Length: 321
Ligand SMILES: Cc1cc2nc3c(=O)[nH]c(=O)nc-3n(C[C@H](O)[C@H](O)[C@H](O)COP(=O)(O)OP(=O)(O)OC[C@H]3O[C@@H](n4cnc5c(N)ncnc54)[C@H](O)[C@@H]3O)c2cc1C
View 1: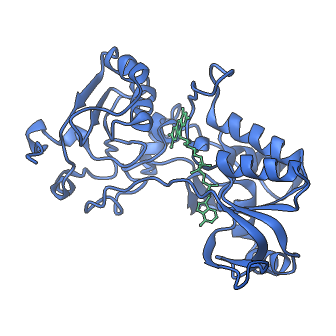
View 2 (view 1 turned 90 degrees about the horizontal axis):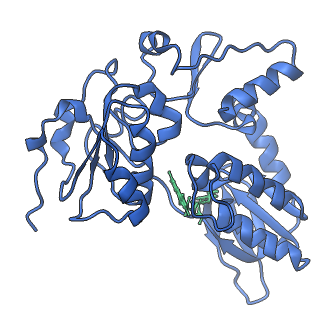
């Protein structure tokens, strides 16, 4: 179940003044189309749009509680210096913190979103000794594992700047978006990666209105439709495979002359009857011309997307260099 629904369920259970209704977009497509929703979860508060996309309970509370950021910043400012401060709470940051804490080192993690990228996939099959797991499940396990140790986890904290120590035994300072500053003798930067954007016109305008980044979250909204996935690495291939089971047709578009995804994923992809792969194709700015109205969601992908259904093949300019 989606994190947002779980969070709202919890809020409704513990606070009798809170009530929420969750609508499954895959089951109630008319509702989705009436409200022109192209990305889930879409949250409405008292009938008005509140937020869109993945949110944790902490994020929802921070948004409804307007003084929360300042209060949290004050608490963070008062913290004593860490011996090791890890910036980033993905698998790398979690591993660094666990190893550090196991040595008895006073450790903290500051992460914009604990769990990192793995939270965005439903199929992980290369984690040795676990033949299949899902991202959110792995993230919960990571969190539990970190909690087994004395690690100060500061979630929803984005580091904005870093001031290195002036002397060898001095303290490094990390400033957070909230304005708070954390100090530490040692820093581990494990900030991973982010969705890569195509930087083509229309991409930002149509973000969450046909341009999507999370196949397992938003895929059901495009049931039966034609979609495009941009990028033929592991993430793109996995997105295309997941989507092929939901949408009408998937076209995977790769800039290079070959896909970089693992052979096992490519084999699976090529076995699917409703998937086409186009190599040597660059997504260009003119694709904006073909962006359909928001009521006709065209496509989605792990990185960025474009309206395949409306774009004839010849619009894809083969690379000449
Ligand atoms: C859709 C998808 C499917 C995938 N499937 C697989 C798979 O099947 N198998 C596999 O091995 N890999 C898979 N990957 C790749 C895998 O998720 C990454 O390799 C892995 O998450 C990298 O871990 P990381 O900890 O280095 O970074 P990330 O997971 O990127 O985590 C970075 C962390 O740093 C935080 N952060 C970033 N900037 C800041 C800042 N300024 N301040 C504070 N915090 C910050 C983020 O919030 C996050 O907590 C997939 C990735 C995606 C997107």
